[in-house]
Amino acid sequence: MKDNQHEQLFTELTPEFEDPAFSELDDEVAATCSGGRVEFNGPNPDVILYEHTGLGGKSLGINATLNDGDDNLDNALIGSGWNNRTSSIKIIRGTWQLFRDGGYQGPHSERGPGRYNTPRAFGQANDALTGIRRIG
Image 1 (cartoon, rainbow, N blue to C red):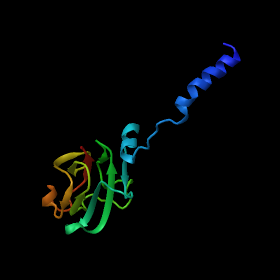
Image 2 (image 1 turned 60 degrees about the vertical axis):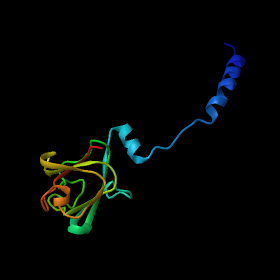
Image 3 (image 1 turned 60 degrees about the horizontal axis):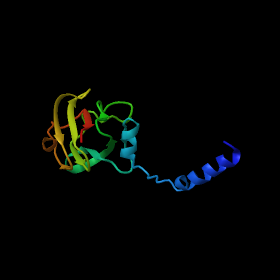
Image 4 (image 1 turned 30 degrees about the vertical axis):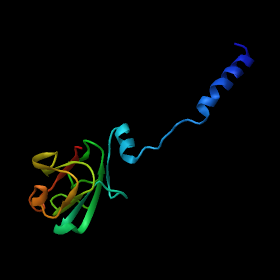
């Protein structure tokens, strides 16, 4: 092709690409596309763990993409350690599995959005939660 033919072809194709239809992805969708993630104490948590019943005391916010979470709440990701410390939970979005033992093992329960003011309400003994994973 001659240079002017390249220029003509480029000019004909350019308007189609000048104003591309991009849309910004929210954090959850973006993370799902990139392989998943878990984040602690972000600005808009999916679930909040509380150290006392009735959603009281210190709290830990968690965001996770589908099939992600934390299989040991006493790990270095969090720092202060939340293993065997949770007495109430507020689930804002998603369905979560709540595990007594590390590695997503042992007795577990599943809960969706709601306020769980006591350990019995979220299916665990007091201060027994060790792992949490988003399943929906």
